[in-house]
Structure formats: C-alpha cells, structure tokens
Image (cartoon, rainbow, N blue to C red; front, side, top):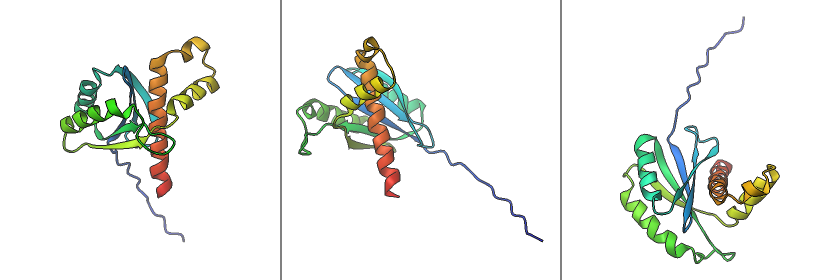
Length: 154
C-alpha cells in the first residue's frame, strides 16, 4: 500500500519591482507582478512629475526595488543622457523609504527594441509614433531583461 502524502504549496507574495526608463521629457514606467514573474507597462509620466509618482506608487503598493535604466555607450561608459539621469537618481534615492532598494540596469538599445517590438506586434505607424507608448515599452523591456538576468543566475 502506497503511503499518500499531502503537499501544501504556499505562494509567498513578494513586493513588486518598479522600473523607470527616465527621459528628458517623459519617463516610461513598468512594474512586475507580486511574484516577479512578468513585467507589465504601467504608465508614462512627465519627467517633472516622475519623482512624486514613484513615491505615491510605493506608498500604495508593495515595492521593494526601484530599477532605473542606466544608459551606456557601446564601450559601457555612461552616455551623455546620464547627465540628467544622475541628478534624478540622487533625488530619488534620498526620498525612497529605507526598505526600498534602488538599482541601475543597462538600457542600451531599449528604445530601438521597443520600436521593433511594436512593429512585430502589428501596431500601425501612427501608434508607433506615440512616444509615451515607446517609453512604457522600453521600461518593460528593461524590466524583462533584468528579471531574465536574475533568474538565469540561479
């Protein structure tokens, strides 16, 4: 007689990861689900409003990591857009709750990849011109790449 065993599977919800593709005018925002299985576009926010948006989002949602796209050159050096991203990153780090970590992740080619993804998805030319959509898609690509990198390490 086989012994029957009962297995109980418990899903432990984690906090989300919020990703920012920071731009001079607009910032694409993406977020994971609580299990950190997938990345989803959230919104696009004006650069002047993104700090408050992130703080408000964290206040009403479980987030323990903010991932900020770090633009680099092909040589791996900071690109010229880093000059306006760096001050934002310092301001964000000062205002984040202590329990929320902030990390940078290479965002090379994400805007080009976002355009390719939109084209492959069958979006019409007018929709592909929507820069806010491109920014959200780029943030989602950054976050997806990050998730793949951490899960491939295990």
